[in-house]
Structures are given as C-alpha cells and as structure tokens.
Length: 494
Picture 1 (cartoon, rainbow, N blue to C red):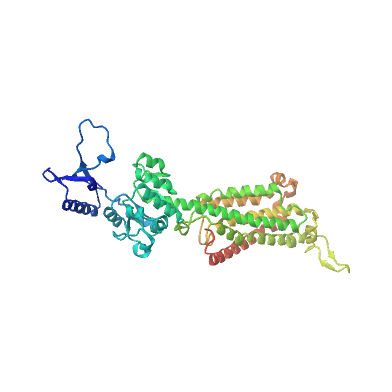
Picture 2: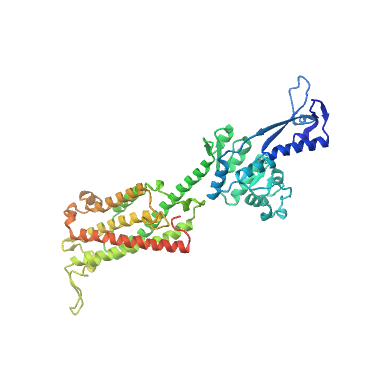
C-alpha cells in the first residue's frame, strides 16, 4: 500500500530518485524475505508541504518519497504451541484472523503447530472452492471481499488461517462461523478487532490491549499464558455438566414421583402424602444438591463441547423416571402384605364362609384400601406416609449418585467428598424425621405420641430392614437402565 502512493525513493546515499519497477521488485523481495522470517515490516514515506498548510485530505497521500523500512520482531510465546495443542484436544478449533501478510502469518502458524500454505489460487467462489484441496490455504482479505456469504460460510468452516483482513472481514468470518452453528470465541487486543469481538459469543482481550478492546471484551486475561483459555473452557464445561446433572436428576425423580402420587391416590382411600410433607421432602433434597456445582466431572464429559438438548433430557426422564414408581409399588406391596398384613385381625371370607385371606397375613389389603385406621391399634395412614417418606429419601440419595456418572457409582466413580457428606446428611435427616415426635406431628397432623418408643416398634424395625433391600433394587435396576440407554442412545449422565 505504501509503494502504491510513492513515486520516488531515497537511495543508499540519501539521494532522491524516481521509483521504477526494478526498485519496486527489489523492495517487495526484501519485504517478503523479512516476512518469511516472522518479522513485521512497515514502510516509511515522507512528503514536503508548504509552510503554514494546516489542512490535509486523503488526496495528499500521494507522490510520496519512500524512505525505507521499520522491521519489528514479535517472538511467539513459549506456551503458545502447547496451548493450541491442548485446545484442539478439547474440541476447540483455533483459527487465525490477522491483518498481517501471509508470509509473517505462515511463519507464526508453523511455529505454533497450525498447518497452512501460501497459494495464489482464487477461492472466491464455490466453483473454485474445493474443501479437500484448499483447506490448508491461507485466505486473504481481498479474496473474502469477493465472496458471497454462502461461500464464506464454507471457507470459514474448512480453512483456519486468514490474513490481510479488515475489521469488516473479521466480523464477516465470525458471523459465518456462528451461522454454521458454532460457539465462537474471539481473542483480540486492538481497535481492528472490536467489530468482530462484538459479534462473537465470547470476546477475550489482554490487560495490555487497547481501552476499547478491553471495554468490548467479555473477559480480560491478566496473565501472559494462553493455557488459561483451555482451563477456562474446561471450567465452563464443568459448570454446564453439573447443571445438566441437576436438571436430569430433578426432572427424572419428579417425573416418576408424579406417577407414584397418582397411583397412590387411585389405589388408597386416604392422602398418601401431604402437601407440607412434599415441601419438606423437596427442601431436604435441595440441601443435598447444593454441593452439585462443586462435584467432580469426569474427563469424558469435558473433552468435547456440549449443547443443551431437550430430547436428551426427555429420553433420560422416560427411561430412568419409571424406576421411582416401580420401587414405590414394591414398597407399598411390602407394607400391605408384610407389615400391615401381619397386624390384621380380620379374616376375609366368601359367601360360603370359606376364608380367602387369613388374619395376620393378607387381611390388611381390605383394611388399607378401605381406609380403616385401626389395625391392632395402629394408624395405617400415618405409618404408610412415614415409611414411604423414608423410602423416598433413600431413593433420592441413590439418584444423586446414579445420574452424575455413566459408570457404576461407588465402584467405578466417586463424587466429591462434600456431595457424599451432604447426601448422607439428607438421608439421616429424612430417615429420622418421622421419628422426631413433635416436628413430625407438625408437618403430618398426627399426634406426636404416635412414634414414642419407635426404636422398639416392630413396624419401624421391619421397615428399616426393608430399606437397604429396596435401595439395592433401585441402585442396580437404575444401573441396568443406564447401561441400556448408553447402548441404545449413547448417553445418560451427559
């Protein structure tokens, strides 16, 4: 550009001479030589104006005298090559958008491990664009100016190095990448990067950048280490994965719990669980889940970028959610046939007087479904709610650890210690809550004396023996569901 507005030059002795074609070729050869060494070359010209002239226009930028070069060297950061490699390993493709010429850029890209080649072939149209043949080409700003948006979307997708770009060129490339469905982060430090930074999903600058670049940036790097980019991407993915864990866990549990409530309402002639009890259950459950944002995230979940997928959530809910009502049905059957059945004092007979269900075995089925409260002096509704609440807490603790991994919890994958402690704390509180006397009476409307001497109560002891069994059924049943989903859909936890 400098030579285009120059008509003369200073020779080695300081004499002004006319700028001929031979001298121009010599100058361009020197520029190319310096550029191939990774140096930036700025041309310097001068022009004399009349004394007292204070107004200037673009037309004055002509008939300049070429004075020489100013050559800069900007060594590649030692961490750059490793950072580029790490980003590629984590599914982040690095593209170079620069205003420098192709020779400087080629030198730098080779130094940091980005393969590219300098070619003169025109790729400004789809007819001239062969993705396989031209994907390593360095694309120039003038070529981009000739491309329509559709061509640019293909070029931006396949090629990684773009040179001699104007601010508008950079902005168009970012827009094209986003139109292709990518989440785009742009790192820039100068005024020429601002327009593209505004169009990017995430804009990054450095603390030594221009003020306007730092004002535009979503984040500013305070350390001169590009490895921070990988660390930041991993942390962001961990936050996303842990958020998805929570959504899938709560969605699946509530989905199954909803069906359990409907079934209980249809089967039994009393309120299976009160509104306040449901609220307390969710409150304690949320306490256990408070640690999920700090949970460990397995490396397989952060290796590739992930996007929100409602279909993924629906499939997990429909496959894993039914485990809750299935185990609830087993618990209800246990209460009816074992706990309450052993307490029934009523024989059920047919019209001929034959005994269908003997007292002390299955007679409680009729008592429970008909809503009778007196089975050997025991309030069936109260005990039903208490045992079901305890079972729900045991299932919830398993759910936290099952949904967080594609592996077998505790045997192949462990959560962070804090999550284990919070889940166990919720389990202990939930198990002891029905036996808390006044507190339980306040949330369940049953007299507190109902659970006096509870640890010497046959019902409580029988229920406590049942809980580990049903928890194991839920645990291994859920793992089978998980394995089936991994086999058929390729995902479960994330």
